[in-house]
Length: 182
Image 1 (cartoon, rainbow, N blue to C red):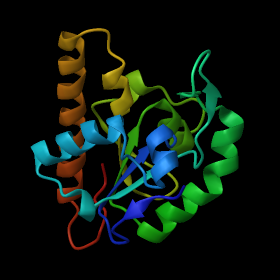
Image 2 (cartoon, rainbow, N blue to C red):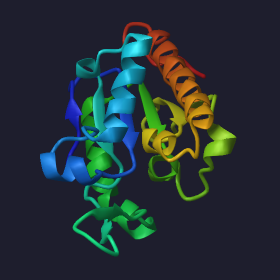
Image 3 (spheres, one colour):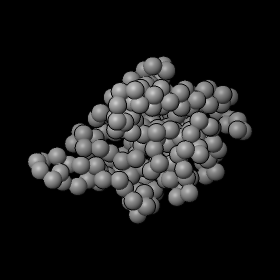
Image 4 (cartoon, rainbow, N blue to C red):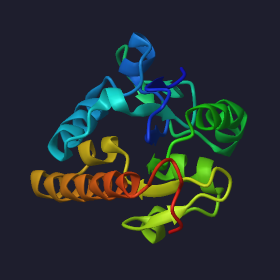
């Protein structure tokens, strides 16, 4: 599944891979994680239609549930990230975003390589060496859903919103299409 959104987006959001609902509906971020993302975007005043939303891995990797018909998410490996990289690279080169938001470790590794660590990169604006875009790393919205209790989900959601605000600010500091140095 390829990304969608504005072909002139100043901000590109990159997730890990399509989930079950995304795979069934054929659109990125339409499941539970997408609802978290939409809520956060609304909170900071970003219109999703003005963004480009995609995933590092273009297919839903899953395993069957032990009982029942559910398809359980399986984390994509380096081979899947590498195999899907040409499509991600093409999306980035066509959209030419000012800011790329890597949502989760898989997205960060797709952009920066296997050495990427979310904890080391989160909360800062990084310079992407390949596309000269500013890059902000944050947790994947599905990570918020997996937090063990309401308090930790709220704390992680607030951090996610803070990271998206940082991306919005970074995109706003680009003047007349010229990417400022970070």
